[in-house]
Length: 144
Length: 55
Image 1 (cartoon, rainbow over the protein chains, first blue to last red):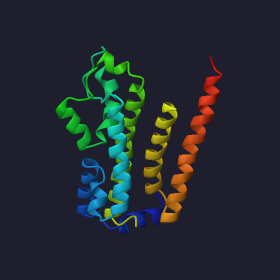
Image 2: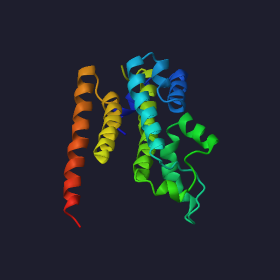
Image 3: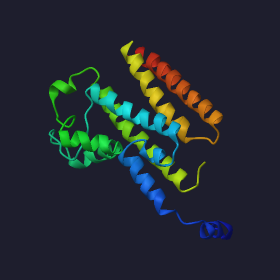
Image 4: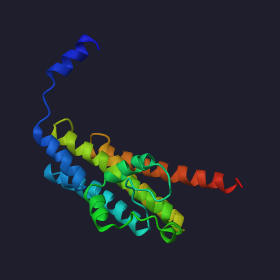
């Protein structure tokens, strides 16, 4: 690391504690982080996109991943998609508590929209990670 | 048509978030979001036609 880069790092202001809270809330409830920052339009658009993406994915019969697997494969293979699904925050946790979307049901997998649903559910979580980082940056004053 | 609708929905969701996260001014964000949406749609259609001819 060069001296000027080091100097920039040393003079950077520490991240305010509130930014971590905003980041956590943005993950937990999609859109809530931007609401806390009073970015109403962004909250509606970005949070709405995640909520709709998740609901549409679930409606299409998509599968949510956790560490259990009924197909004899390693639970480790479930980790990457589970991390993506976990990005949806409360939406994932709510469905996990209800037990909806987690079953390895052949009838569900036979649906024409099953793979689409999977993709929508994964993308909803990944998009919410972007929302979370955006809300964090706004709260930390690194973004307007 | 249903496949096309699903692809369009996907492109809308992704481009809304990509557009909102990137760039600095609202105008740049709108333009970037529209560009990402167009890219999703065009690439999706091109790929689907390529795959259509592959048995």
